[in-house]
Length: 442
Ligand code: SF4
Image (cartoon, rainbow, N blue to C red; front, side, top):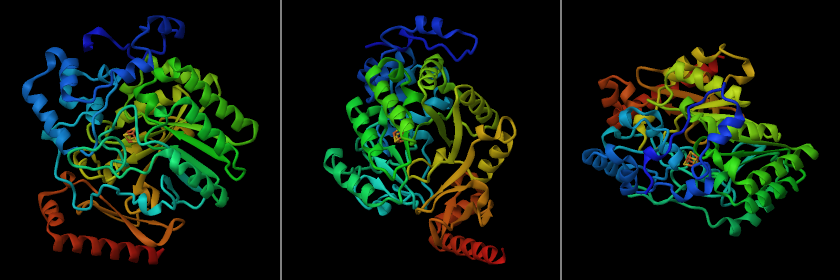
C-alpha cells in the first residue's frame, strides 16, 4: 500500500507557471482513476496511510466515530495528502471527512436525518420540487468522498452502523418518470443535478442527463453540483471523456440559450492546490461557468480570516463564491454546527473585501422545507436561547421555520432547557409568538 510520504501536493502558488506545475505532477497521483481505486474506506487502510502517525488510541477513536457517524468513510489519497497529520484532531480538512468519537456531541433535540424534508417535497423518486421554478435532480447516491456533514445523510453513501440509507430506486428505472414530470411541469426552468455527486457519473450518463435536459424546451438553466473539484480535481485534467462530456453540454446549452453551470463545494482555502488551479484553469478556458457553495463549520472555516482567504482564492480561479450555508441540522454533526450569530458576524467581516458579485450570501437552508433564507433575515432571533425563526413567503407563506443554534454555543441553563421537553416547548412557542408579533408589526 502506498503511504503518505510517497507523494506531496504542492500548495497553491499563483507565481508558478502552469506548464511547470503540469510537469511536476506525478502521473499516477494525477490520475483520477488511480485516486478512485485507492480511495480509503476502512480504518485499516487509513492506518496504513498514516504509517508512523497511526496511534492505537486514535484508531479506536476513529472507529468509535465511524460507529456513530451518519456517513460512511471514503477519502481520496489526494485529500489524505492535504491533512496535516501532526495536527490531526484540529485539521480542518480531516474534520470534514474523518469522524472521531471523542468530538461527537449529543444532537440537539431538533436535529433530524432529512432535516430539509426533501422526501416530502419529492413528487417522483429522485426529484425534489420545492421552489416553484426549480427542481433538484438526484442523479446518483455515490460521491468521490463522503462528507461528515452531508445534508443527504439519509440517502447518500453506504449504510452506517447508525443509519440505513433511504435510497431512491436505481436511476435508470426512475429517469423516464423524472423526465415525464419535468416535461409536464413547464414552470420548472432551473434544474440542479446533484446527488450524490456528478463526478461519479460515467461520461455517457453525464452526457445523456445533460443533453436530455437540454431537449426540454422549458428548461433555461442547468447546474451540475459537485464536491469533486475540491477532492478530486485531477478528474478534470485526466478523465478527458468526462470533461469533454461536460464541455459538450455547456457548449450545446450556450448555442441554444440555456445556461449550464458547474457548482463547486470548497470549504477551506487549504483545499485549493496546484491540481485545483490546473483543473479550474482548464474549465475556465473551455467556457464552463463556475460558482461555489460552502458550508460554515466549526473548526473548519468559522474564522473570518479563513473565509476571506477562501473567497479571494476562489475569485482568482474564476469560481464565484456564491453561497455559504450554515450547517444543516443533521443528526450526528452537532459539534460541526455554528450559531446564527456567528454566521452573521463572519458575513459582516467578509462583505467589503472584494467585489460584491464575488461576496457570498450567507444562508440558512431552513429546516422543514422553507428553502434558503439570508441568515440576517430572521423574523426573530434569541441568541441566549439559541433559536432563530424565519419566514419563506414565496415557498410556504403560512409557515414559520426554526433554525436552532448548536447546544454547545449556549449557556448550561439554556442547554438544560432544550433537553427538557416541557421547557423546550416553551422556547419554541415563545419564539414563534415573538416572530408572529414582529411580522404583524411590519
Ligand atoms: S459530496 Fe456532497 S452529496 Fe456527497 S457526501 Fe459530500 S456533501 Fe454529501
